[in-house]
Length: 282
Image (tube, rainbow, N blue to C red):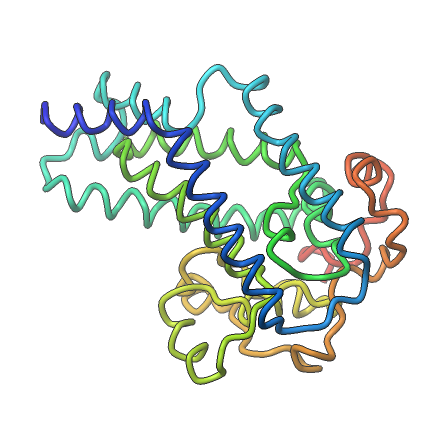
């Protein structure tokens, strides 16, 4: 137990470095892949989209640090020290706790994602992500700061209640960030390879369906890391109706790229039309 906690403290001290190196490496890999082998031809200016998407990406960590005295890793460490949460009070192998922590966190992200599509108030925040008129690695980073704050509230509560090990939280955070950039990548993967991969991870072709302008496609394929939840809960859709190269990305009510700059994205939840996307409207 002492060794495990020693490793946990070490991981916390190096968390920022681990996450930054992981983020930068994964981002550069998929950026270069998109340039070398794009899946779709972009329809709008990369310069203006990236300014908005990367701008909000830089803003979000600042907002989190201002809003919260502790984040998910810190909460896991506190729960471990005080023996809070389910897993901290079960006499089971540490490896099982690690696996359970990652899986439960991922299932929660799936359910949270469904909730953000089901509740119109939450959808107002989440439609910032869906309003992107193209689909590439930066789309996976495009989330309104208030959505990030609300997501952190849910994550903190879960980490403490579950008693998730510190290392499992760090692993999950790194995987989630990397998976979001991967499955939003405008990258070409052979169809046969994609067919196999999507049994293990959410692939770009699988998640791209979720960004279709067609509402019944928008409300499918909610998974970020693992694809099993969509299959289990009946929200899986194999392919977009118009095919990946012909499908329209985004939301029907937001089609003007000039109104999707960073300032517009920040006020979009308060002034934008929610459209017909929220699940409970059907």
